[in-house]
Image (tube, rainbow, N blue to C red; front, side, top):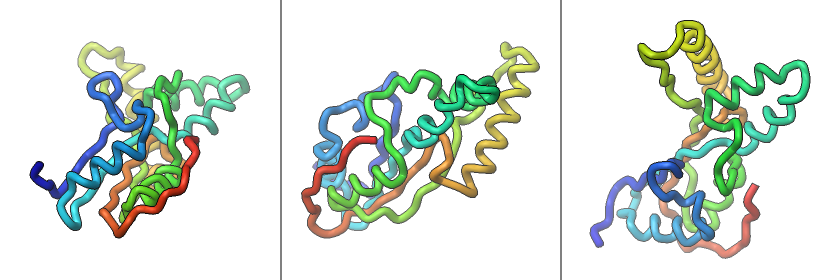
Length: 164
């Protein structure tokens, strides 16, 4: 096995298995750590469980249509994932498996409207995603998705971290 400089884990359950669909995230992160060269970077992009939980609570009220649009435009309306993470919970998991978090970024999904999308729907998507991306740049913890970058550190410690 040849060590690499960057190891990227994406949350793409419909395309590839990811760490977030597996029983043991610890095992996947330990394997990723073994694949990295010294000072190599692990990059992970995941939906923000805290964003989902906060916005989902508003589905039934007066802000329901806005909440539904926020979740739908970020592929989170049904949260079809096995595990959800917050910035804090994923940071703890990374630290427990021997990584030091060096950077986090808040984000939203990219626009997907094309020539077949109705004009009003494309405009709605642009408005929502542009606004979310601007807010996510100011507050990673409030973003619908986040990326976290970590480098391998010293010996990992063993401490169970609950999924959020």
